Image 1 (spheres, helix red, strand yellow):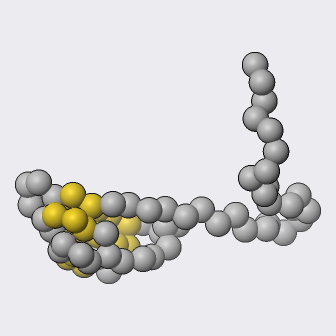
Image 2 (cartoon, rainbow, N blue to C red):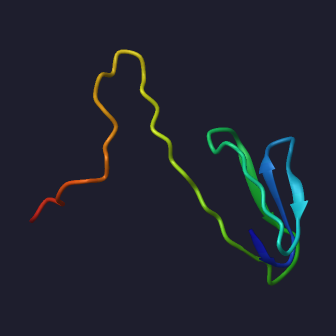
Length: 71
């Protein structure tokens, strides 16, 4: 989400200009760009990683539960 200024963002060939209050969503596994169009531009970037099950991989996706290793 853009909080100040203007940003050009999005997948290559499909990028758009965004201004304050604007946001967009798209897949992160395709070529994309972020370009500030004004000095003082500020925006928040949120990414979400989705683990897909690949053919032949029977390991379940991690649940985020458990303990961190202790050194």
